[in-house]
Image 1: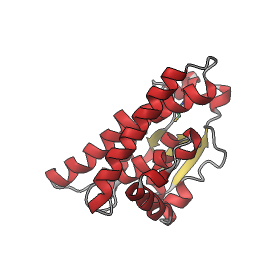
Image 2 (image 1 turned 90 degrees about the horizontal axis):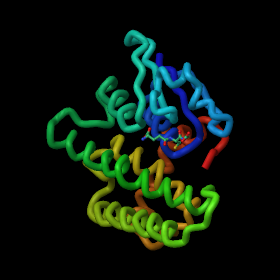
Image 3 (image 1 turned 120 degrees about the vertical axis):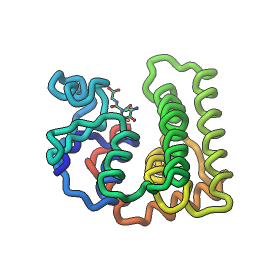
Image 4 (image 1 turned 135 degrees about the vertical axis):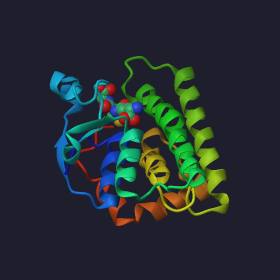
Length: 206
Ligand SMILES: N[C@@H](CCC(=O)N[C@@H](CS)C(=O)NCC(=O)O)C(=O)O
């Protein structure tokens, strides 16, 4: 049994969608980010970064995992699904997972913060993060021009990037400019595990 600590944000969905896609049983602990529950000392024993998501594997000596990408790899390896075992296939998936972790997530996240919640309006900063997010969407669009998924079969790389790309409206990016990305986005949205995972928990916080 897995304990999931999360909130309805792109990084949180990466964990809930992966759990749903893998058909794993888990208990949901929804944290109220507005109330700072992610900084609670007891929670920070599980995630020293004071952010969501985190999981605890009750069947593996209460092993705690933080960082959404590490959670996805842990769950995929635990089940032998959504991440190939061979070195090349596995590397391709991890490359596109890291692309999200180091690129799409941070850039799109900052684009949102500086557009919506930062106390000062800094147009050059907003422009920088929007331009960079669009550039990264362009990389995904090109990658998807001759394939259905980012790396071989549907994988945690698709889940990670999709959980962010689906929030494109929140930073006013229109997917019409990225036709391959738009097709991939709509196709993945129809998967039952993905559709259910993004409703957990049910209140969006971005
Ligand atoms: N690199 C981390 C980022 C986690 C992260 O930034 N989580 C956000 C929600 S998407 C959060 O917990 N924000 C609350 C806060 O910053 O206190 C991961 O991928 O798990």
